[in-house]
Image (cartoon, rainbow, N blue to C red; front, side, top):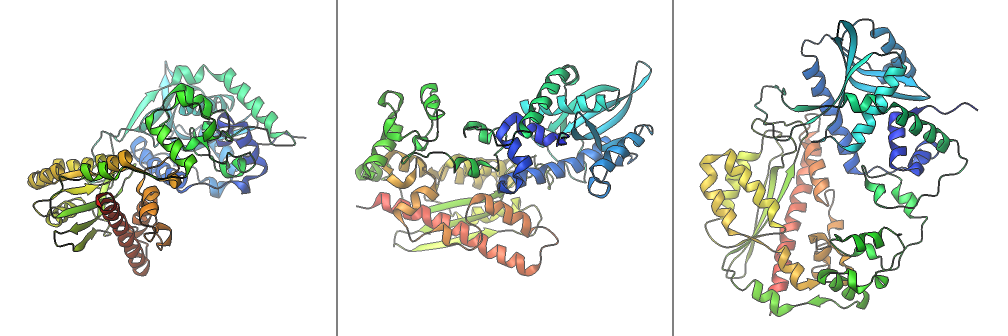
Length: 497
């Protein structure tokens, strides 16, 4: 029986996990990709578009349309184009029953000979080990398809680069020359290919236990399928937070059925012991006196603030960087001395840079005095610092807001833990134990930060209908308001006498 043709992505799946490769080939319908995976694909597509403009500014090259040509047609067309000595994008190669498509193939001359330079474009901000595997595979397949390869590089995002507008993205990408390494790993790649084909030919999927490899370098869409077929702990030790020691990590990696009760006391720190004791006993830990003492200095009015942000591999707006978190929405609850609770919100779905309007609205909403509570302060603080740097005229009031920020998260972590938190102090883990009526699952549409960013991207697409945009607007407002109402409810619970 002839060997199955494998794509480069399937070969990389084999590098992550042999079982993943087997499932990709034989049971692809079981894969469930996460929203984060789809976002990564979208980023890669956009970065690829920009790369073609950077590497072919005069538009002399050819982009192969794989959907129109088909895989075999694209590979055949590549062979025809190699004689034209013009840039080729998505050039197809097949050898050893593996096919791959090169992002960028550029004609060069080396010591008087006509050769080619290959660049693989990545939406990450650095060169990863799996990128090195990727280009080594690409180089072997191209060489065995008759390409005289002079140079091999990976181009990745420079996240310190600032977009100056007018569609000029020169400087967005940084190249790492991997020629010597990529061309020197041919025998190694041949071995991977042979092993991958052997896995695919097996009648049954390999017996590989789930573990950290299931999320490195990418989240595996088969994790749910694989984990459901393994014995599970009644109270999993993996709920223990902030695992940093080798001893505890080694224990957790030994299998999904490790019970929290079986973890030795000696390998746990104080926080982990608290989580274990509360979880196993079923008795909530609440240092009511300590929590009140931590909040005793609060003056009135008291504010509760939350941001929603979007980020782009390819910056949309002048003055922004790749993957910079751009705030487009905030929710603010104000609790007065009289006991009244007022809500203010700001949301910009115009598609224009929301930053300046966001900063101006924030300054007005936060007033002149009173603590401003957030949950995990480093996030909001960093965003406000960025706004102050971008808009010097607003830096004074924004810096005043920064000085007023107070973080509720460490107060919760130090003084409260409920058995159902499963090792997490995220607001979505804590809030149901204190205010079960504030249920995120009951929200229509947006229920977490990732969904908020996805909704923002959809709403700002020109093709989105006014009705759908209005629906997203309502969902985003309701979600962000839930976050700050939740902050207030947690603060009030901790402060109760």
